[in-house]
Length: 202
Image (cartoon, rainbow, N blue to C red):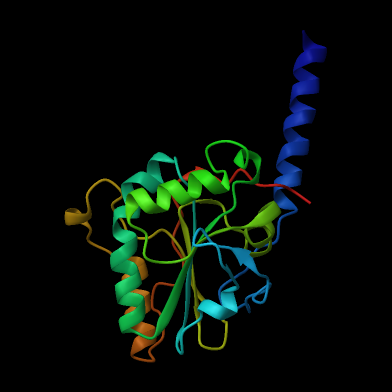
């Protein structure tokens, strides 16, 4: 029994170590892999650079079935509107490589985007390359870059996943508005909430 417990502890330690190998962008770091082409549910291929507006880009790691995404994704269209009003682009990435043949297959993504009325690129992050490079942790997890590709915000969308009407701190919206006014983002990092990204670890 003790031997089994030891093996399980060693296995868990390996998993944790593997997770720590993923890259992680800190506030102020420059975006990477910005020219990597990603397959969009529309049938086209786009890169982060293609989607960047004059004042920057909002990147959201998301998926089809996470309960946290289901609570927050109804706010995605409003985020796109606010982003556009402030000169930023928006793109949503599905990095769940381990579910690519199931809930997060490309066909399932197409159906999900259509059912939810997505009006922004919803793309496949093959082999979790961007999630690993950025340090995306959850679905959802938001990253905002300024016009110079500097990371100015990362974290949760707002402070209330349950009810949009009861949000007191709209983290992403406020960051987008700050960039639109060429002001510093005051709250640059919050704790992301959601399901873990089912990533491929390289």
